[in-house]
Length: 105
Length: 284
Image 1 (cartoon, each protein chain N blue to C red):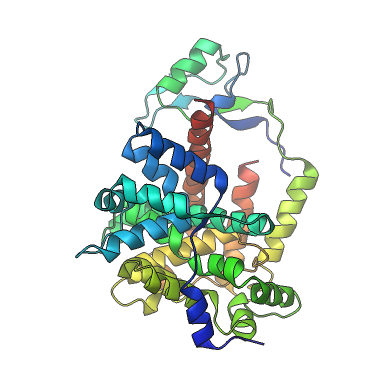
Image 2: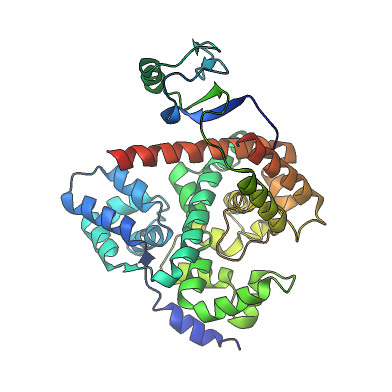
């Protein structure tokens, strides 16, 4: 599992004291909060009101899947693709799914 | 030993609408109270493949034009009739809950992915379908597996038991054990329940989308969506081995393999938002 120094979380999982690891930006590219901002309850409520659904925070404040759970999901992924390994398109798809899974840990 | 086709067809006539008691009770209560807006009822019913199929089928059986949107179907039937369908549905037996939960999960994931994919492909699609129609197409494409699990459970169990040892598809094993595969069962149910031609085409041709004359694009969307969500782990019961993506369907949608990562990211974002929405509903 690749180590990262930030975690992508739902805004509903955010808590006061967490620190933003990336700028919070609206789809219109308007910046709402800068990287490094310490979240407060009021700020979280304001971000929710502006329609922000996810943020990146520093560290890993929320428990992620265990190493065992990750390895199990990769094992199941390989099993699902085990009968289409002769199809180049499916081999590429397997790499993509694995990359997306890792990105979302 | 497989069953003769007339026997299968006769048993299909008595297929009933099954559902999870918790969601049926919630819909029943909301309709009874009469305060929930139609959009909330549509959102709840559209997560249930069997109930959605029944509502669409009933509406189409009394309509002169095809109805593929749940909102239109419910408006056409009236809430009283919809309430009757909800109350007539049977609870899923305990022994089937785990496997059918997988079917419900696959159906909903495919419905969401079909909308995401259609949105991504919008600039290149010749025919534009509305979101509700796309949702229904993805949600109902695999009704046949639900029927196989719930109404031909012994034959389905025998087919699944052979799946790990034999490098062949569940379709072929079901044809050998039952006499019809899940595509045939789904198509038969679509005919009995009077589902509209677009939805029937998605059920019948989701594994061979280029054969769906007149509906190729929508069926190709469902085919690619099904493959992607199964690749991500949304599988029904023991049928977990992937079938190859149809490269001609990818070409029809002008999709390249490099597009798929962005599509999967959008899909997971939407699934997260749905969970967020569910959480808000639960708390309120």
